[in-house]
Image (cartoon, rainbow, N blue to C red; front, side, top):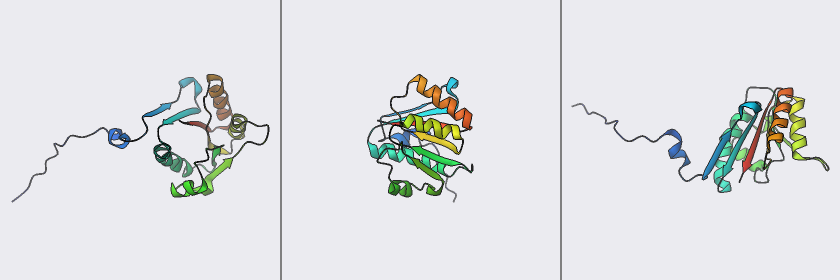
Length: 152
């Protein structure tokens, strides 16, 4: 006796099931005129936002590019313990904090221009058009990617 399987169950779109019970607003933006610059906005409970952020940072930390993944002035919730628990390759991550008299924006631009990082992640909020363009220019100069993350 042969049994037939029914494949007629309703299927959810890929992210509907994943996003159920996660932040209420997720926005990915990469304006065409700002190539080299991307922005990710996550709004909701901090734990949910960090849960969504972990695989992105993990993937970037395991990039085959020999350069650094640089985090500029990350929020206090991104501790060394969190980085380890999220499975990031901490040997490929550079954490930078602005010196006195230096802004996080200036530090991110400098890190991008130097070209020693494949991706420089900043946590600037809000990011105006001139800031996006400035980060995109610096990214092109250093042949890097700029990713700004807004946690709200």
